[in-house]
Length: 258
Image (cartoon, rainbow, N blue to C red; front, side, top):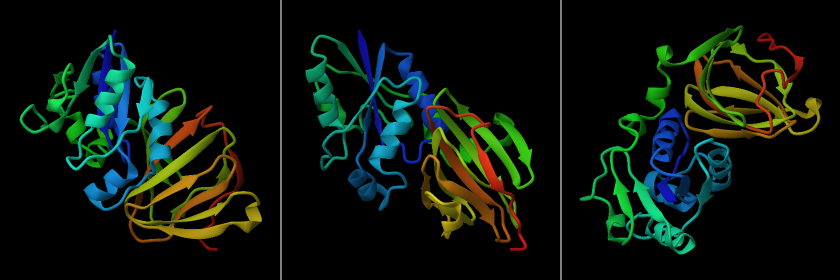
């Protein structure tokens, strides 16, 4: 059996990551993601958008992924500890470590780990690209709505990835879902959300700006509005036992005069 290993922060996960994972899985039988810690992300980019637990849940729900593991950070920023853990767990199996983008044997510290086969350039250019890549109109199906439009970036049984574009002075209905959670990452612009975990009459307004993240819990009332002059772009991750457009209860429509 071949054990394929990839590592990264996956924060936030996008379709370039998914293409990378799909290509990696083709190289073996089992795909393990060595997921970087929140502390590692803070050191790298001074903050994280989604905590480890959220990133872990999303990755585990992706079809190519068989397991997600944590590991100890080191001063080199490597995943050497993860590779050693996997070697101990699978002592008799072939282990492949995949790298994408511009990484090669000259610039990765993991090369010091013995009995591991290294693969470079996995996923082609997909891993190099981030939010700008997934927003290309012609690549994805889209649907128009009264509040703007959305793009279906990735759809699986328990996971859906969308880009929402809420037009200026528009808003969605006040709604909730019974079978899924959602994570919103504001990639462009800003918005105001109305949110309540239990009673709809107790909703509070929260302003979200670019690069902020919000977690919508299952059965919580929520509404995205855009009272600002520019469109708001949100990367939405839906995950749960069912990702169905019919899994929705609408209480009221958006009224921009209130």
